[in-house]
Amino acid sequence: MKIAEVSISHVRIPLKRIIKHASHARTNTDNILVRCTLEDGTTGFGEGLPRDYVTGETIDSSMEILRTSQISSQLESCSDFFQAVQMAERLHLPTAPEDDRKCSANAARCALEIAVLDAYGKKFKEPLSSVTKLLAGDLFKPVNKVRYSGAITSATGLKMKIASLLYSLYGFKQMKVKVGIAGYDDAKRILQIRKWLGKKIDIRVDANEAWSIDEAAQRIQELEPAGITCMEQPVPHEQVYHLKKVRTQVRTPIMLDESLCSMIDAERAVEHEACDYFNIRLSKCGGFIPSLRLAQYARRHGMKYQLGCQVGETAILSSAGRHFACSVCDIRYLEGSYDKHLVKENFSKRDITFGWGGVAPAITGHGLGIVMDEKALARVSIRQEILRG
Image (tube, rainbow, N blue to C red; front, side, top):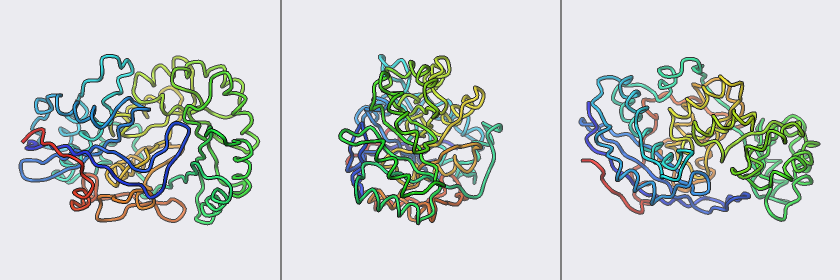
């Protein structure tokens, strides 16, 4: 069975609230969607979130990469799901000449790969989680439900207190808090959040590259009395390979996010002893299969990992993340499935947002396991192009 048509869409989706951290503030999200249609009409969808401050990608660069990458020559006829998975792993989009990290086509590749896997998963009646079983048996440990973290971003004062109390009352067990935002007293803020959340909730923090390497240790030490369990991306990417010294000065494990976008990043992080954790995010890391490979690499080198998400993911990436989370072992922290709480158009006819306490069931349908809301897609589409067909 061959893919008969590939099309791409630029969608702009309003968010239900402003999301702010040290690197960016966002009121809407610009995403790229890929639709793959098989010869028999079976259709799959994939999504990527280009972020120029993470991987150097934009909507325009992603669409151009997909338009000029000779995708047709890479799309083979597949007679079973394993062949489709093997083909999906081989999918290659060229990166920018100046990109020595090889991550400047990751959002586009993620959208294409997931669309291919969704289409063939539906055709051959396999869930996306089967990819883990087929390619990464050492990671494969299926579960029937997972629990997501909550997040507190730029809230202060009464809003921060209300958010903390609501998360606690709603039964969350883990919380990520953004720090490093200009004008905020991080140490005071984290202690207040700890007081409102209580002692039992696991709190980690994310600085989104806010600090310099010279101040990082002191900033982290100031937060440690609140009992934080992880410090995410404290310094800009250009300085992360000096974090080995910082790690000897603090008790808190260090996680890389903006600096963990490719296997090259992972290899350099291990070589320079820059971190304890990888933040794996499907779009940022190039798709479901590259994310599996990063998790395998982490385990082989004694590293831990979380599955993160990007602000503005719709049900397409949320469901892909759910399949990853419900099939991959040893995920320390889990983010995603904010769907109805964040985006105004979600694309799925069935709500897959997490429930009480962040708990969400495994998705058991074929492919992504969702039914696309084509009317919602039409409402937010900025432009569409057919690449093959």
